[in-house]
Structure formats: structure tokens, C-alpha cells
Length: 411
Image (cartoon, rainbow, N blue to C red):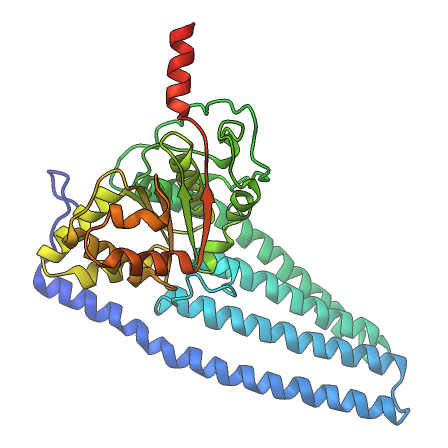
């Protein structure tokens, strides 16, 4: 609820305590999911028991074609039910009990990053339809031993499952869209501003465009706004014909975002105006569209942020909070020299992110010359950790901005 001024009303202490207590009861469900893990073990035993019986009967010549088909369908049925259990265990625990920290894990399920009750219900419904289909197929394969009454009701129940799943999927679409639209307007009261038209590119990077789902369905626009990009850039709009030389294949590989999942880094090195920030922002935008949280800031802004956290005695908490963002972007390293204190802060950031999260860094000088930027002995150790798991892209050429200004002046 909100007061008449429009600001949120602070709950009274008893109300807040009661709410926290009720919310804490969600942990009562945790044993239920661990119980389902035990059931998963039972189905593993049942699978190998049925498999062993099938093998034995085949080897002794007592397996008819109908028996083999029914046995295989029974194995498929066990696997599908086990998959349903996994979906309930992982998705239900993530939705109703507590977050499962799998960000950046290469085996993270695609659906886990946006799991919610609606998604979980639809997936469970479709899984139940699949299991029902297998059961119905078993009945028709063994039709000689199945009564017409069982076939009739089996078909009716299966069709009821199909209709229910279709209705649930149809109803979940508008609910998800409304929830995402509310998230986009959270704290703003308006929809995002329209994007400015992208500048035409004379030569495009060899990167296949990854058309993201609509923003109303993914929340990508909310992540892009929260990232703090100076402007919106796309990889497909990068003028690949401007730099005299740069590694197009490496940039294309970075565009697949595998480096974010692997917690590796990317470093763009080159003179001002060669497109380093464009590439960094474009990769950040694509990461947001893929479901990752991203934060962008210049090197000077990062130094200020970490300095304020240290002054408040919460530097460790600030670094830990940044772990929620799989990708951090540090722009314009080298444009402003840093003293020994700021250098130590940058070292702590790089060291904390090492093999824990990804960094994109843009700089105007090679890593071997970072001692010119960072005072104190921390530059070498910082470069060692940053470059250990990093793709380094060097861009050569004149400033794109200067070239456009010169061309406009000539006209």
C-alpha cells in the first residue's frame, strides 16, 4: 500500500516481524524436496530393475516383440517421470524456497534463469501430457489384454490432460506479459524511451544476429536500463570497416557469450575512437538479452564507487554484492592515472572477480604498460589475473569521431 503522498508506507514493527516469520515458513517445504530426491533414487532403481529383466528375457529367448516394445515404453515412462521429478525439485525449490546459485555454471538449465510459478506449471502440464501419452500407447500396444472400458477412459483422461495443458499455457501468457510490463515500469511510471536509430555500418561483423524475445517476455529492457550503459549499441551495427586491423573472429566468438558462462574476461586495447566502448557495450547489451545482469562504468567511476564503499567500511560487502552480476564492464582504463590507494581498490576488484565472474575492460594502452596508469606494485598482479583467462582484442586505426568531424568539415 502507499500513502497519499505516493511514497511507500513503512510497515509497523509487529507487522514486519509477522511478515518475516510467515515468509520464513517457506523453509518447511525444503524437506519435501529432499524427499522427492529420495523418490528419484527409487525410480533409478526401478529403471535398472526393468532394464535387467528385459536383458535377461532377451538373452534367454523369452522376449516377444510386444514384450520388448512394452518394456521399452516402461523404461521411457520411468525416465519421463524422473525428468518431471527433477523439474519439480529444482524449479519448485528455486521458486518457493530459496534461490539456487548456478549463475555462470555451464550446465545451468535454460529455463532456470526465468523460472516462476507460471513457467513451472506449464512445464509440469506438458510433462504430464507426455507421460500420459506413453501410458496410452502402452495400452494400445497391449490391446489384447486391455479392456475397452480401460481404453475409453484412458483416452478421455489423456484428452483432458491435453485440454488442461493448452488452457494453462494460454492463460499463463497474458499473466507473464503483465508481470514483465509491471517490472519495466517499476519505479519509473512510464515505458522505456524509444531507441535512437542505429548508425548505418559500412561493413558488418561476421556475427549472426541473435534476435532476442520481445522485451515484454524477457525483462531484457529492464536489465539494459539497470546496467548503466552510456548509449545502446549493437554488435551488428559496429562499423567493422573503420579499424585498420582487429581480430574479427575473436569478436564473433565473444558475441556468443560463452566467455560469460566460463567466467572469462575480454580486453579491448586500442587508441581512442576505434570502437572499444561500442564493442564492450554491445556485448553487455547482448548479455542482458541473454538473461545476465550487467553493470557498466568507467574506470574513474568504479574507483569512486569502491572508494566510497571502503570509506563506509563495507568494501567486502560491495565486492560480494557485485557477484550477482555475471558481467562487469570497466571502460576507459588509462585515460586517468590512479594513485596507490585507487590501484589497490582495482586490484581487489580484479582479484575478487578472478574465476568468479567476467570482466570486460577497454583501455588505450597494452597491459604491459598498465604500470603507467596504476601507482604502486599492484599493476603486475592485476594484469596477471585479468589476462590469465581473457580474450585480448587489439584495434588499430584513427579515431572514428575525428574522421566524421573531418569529413563534415570538408563538406
